Length: 101
Image (cartoon, rainbow, N blue to C red; front, top):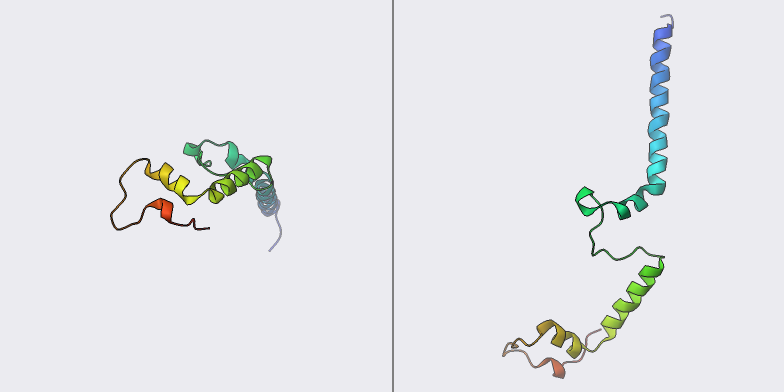
């Protein structure tokens, strides 16, 4: 079967498409994680209550605040969560319980 110019053009088009798709994957690998941060939630971006990414100054501040809340006495956390509602009779008051860490 002789090789015609028509076959060569199809082969060249296939090779060029392969390289183009390969280039897209390398671009997505580098900038894909950053694009999700700036997209609105309705377009597939991150929701507003997602913690910051690791390695950023905001992440360090977030972790310090989280640790501070974790080390707070349990009675302060329970009082803030209950905010004046009556506790069930089967449970002892929150002040008599030790904090769980």
